[in-house]
Amino acid sequence: MSAYNDMNIHPSTFILIGIPGLEAAHIWISIPFCVVYLLALVGNCSLLFIIKTDSSLHESMYLFLCMLSVADLIVSTTTMPKLLSLFWFHDREIRVEACLTPVFLIHSCSTMESGFFLAMAFDRYVAICNPLRHSAILTHTVIGGIGLAIVLRGTALLSPHPFLLRWLPYCRTNIISHTYCEFMALIKIACAETRIRRAYSLIVVFLTGGVDFILIICSYVFIVHAVFQLPSKDARLKTLGTCSSNVSIILVSYTPAFFSFLTHRFGHNVAPHVHLFVANIYVLVPPMANPIIYGVRTKKIWDRFLKIFSFPKHLN
Image 1 (cartoon, one colour):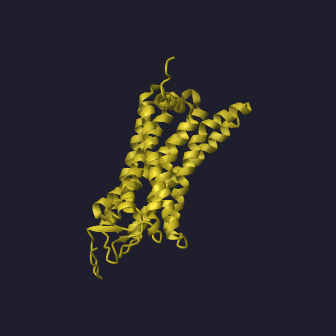
Image 2 (tube, rainbow, N blue to C red):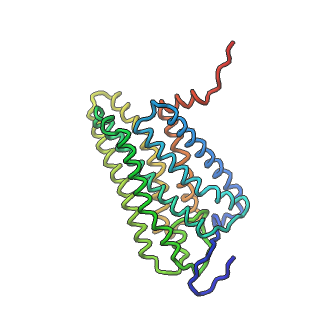
Image 3 (spheres, rainbow, N blue to C red):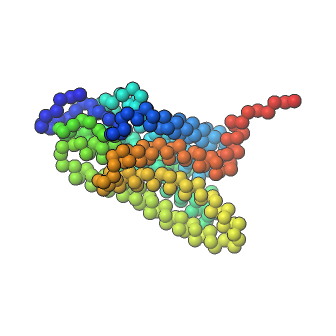
């Protein structure tokens, strides 16, 4: 480990320590983490394969779901290999460049995920409130444009993060009390004024996740209003059922994200290991849950999955 003094320095490496206080249990904690990560990989890759190979699924809802799956794969794959290496082989050291890259990828892709949730909510709004014009409004060109705008937004707003962190002096320590490199975890060990950087991070979160969440709520308010104008109970239940997968995914993703964000900045009384567990749930559980929720609750995807992965029947 590099020697430190009172002078401002820029270390070439950081040291990840995992979950403070639970070092002895790292090997056991890694088992469910590894299982969840493998399920996320298999589930999202299967979902992408199914949608790509079935032309009947080349609709707006499923195309936005493909974009979400790609972002999920990037987020989980950015964090889990290093975490498992840390837990299994005590590989704690990580170069600054290799640390700052996940900072950008995790936060930018998380921002993109929020945008894809909003796009999926908009898709449901158009499908329910203006069904006759759904295919005319959400053409493949429009879908591609929405996806590109979401990617560009996440890239542009989060690109400054690595540079804001790289120029900071880390004169107290190069030890990061986390399982992966994360913006606030690095901010906390810097020995310089970080108020502007924290403010920028807060503004970005509000302009992306905060605004997206407000618009998602508004879209579902309009959807619920439209649904209760339908004449029969069966029609209302069937229409609401088409939104249930979206709502489930949004709740699974936003709940740990908001908890992690708030505890990092305001939850000073929250035990460190609780925060770190939530931070890992945030990058692991939604990528695993998204394809499961959509695969099980969407008949087209489930039928296609059974058709592709079922064993062929033997002829008598």
